[in-house]
Image 1 (cartoon, rainbow, N blue to C red):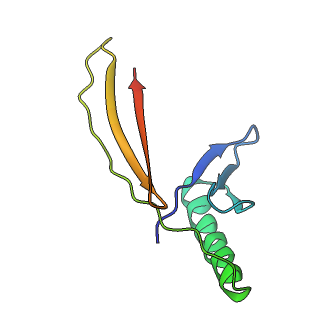
Image 2 (image 1 turned 60 degrees about the horizontal axis):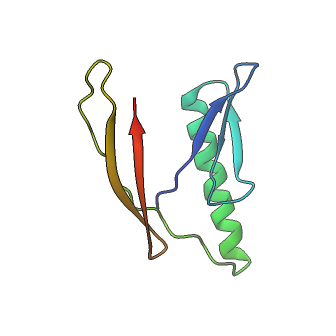
Image 3 (image 1 turned 120 degrees about the vertical axis):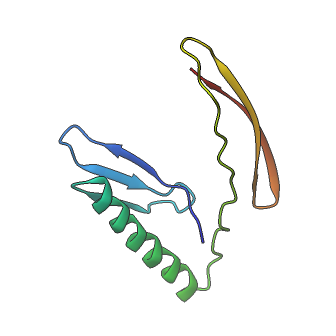
Length: 96
């Protein structure tokens, strides 16, 4: 299964990762590598707990990566759609 995670570095240099589709599933580490390993363990534990308590497990994400050529001061717009939980979301993102 695939889940989107967000990684930020706090003011003390610690990396913090969270999984938005699993509320409260947060971990940290001293490096990006460590935080990725830790959040993976946290997600496994979270999903295991959901299953143990017969709670619904959020679906895996489906996404595409779009590569665009960037030219010095050119702004590129990419139109894409995401399918999540059988609902389609359309977005236009601005890349500067």
